Image (cartoon, rainbow, N blue to C red):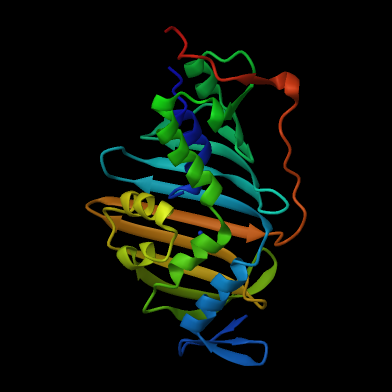
Length: 277
């Protein structure tokens, strides 16, 4: 039996949680137009929906709960045109205080994903640095689970992350800050998970609700530039002794990104079963 879900979950871990001038009165200046904070967040979500490529740096920290401390840190390249493709590099992966040696990398191109991880290779008994997997090649018994994980990668986008913030009823502008050398307006607020989940695609809704099942409200901060593009987003929450903090910094909007499959001689197919079976 092919057991791919744990492998792809490592590759997709960073995507799951897998998102101008300010004034203290809850409004922000955007050019010559003065926007209420809630309207500015709405426009930021709209602008994010127009972005077809970008780069991002991601950090996820989680503490407490049954699994102990966890951390995922890495970077992401994304493009939706001419074809969907992502390149995820996870330099640091720690779950329950245990470090995953060598991190992980996943390249998604169409319906094919290439995964590189020392842990995955050891588990699967792979002989090449990269493992190539296509949904069409999966055993029926494993296919549904793998499709769920693939969907997390395929459906992640900048717009989806910022769209969650539009469920906020208390967002306000808190000042101006420079992010990545760009002047931005800093917005802060909270959003109820139940309401935010209704804003995402139904295929993603159940996953979001499950991931944040212990959290009623999520605190967020958004740094938006003069063009109302989101330069940075942080999400945080706590419940029953467990906490999480996710930070994503974005750049290179609509600029060309280089995403390519690994060299063919470095790629092998997923073995039929785990090493030793």
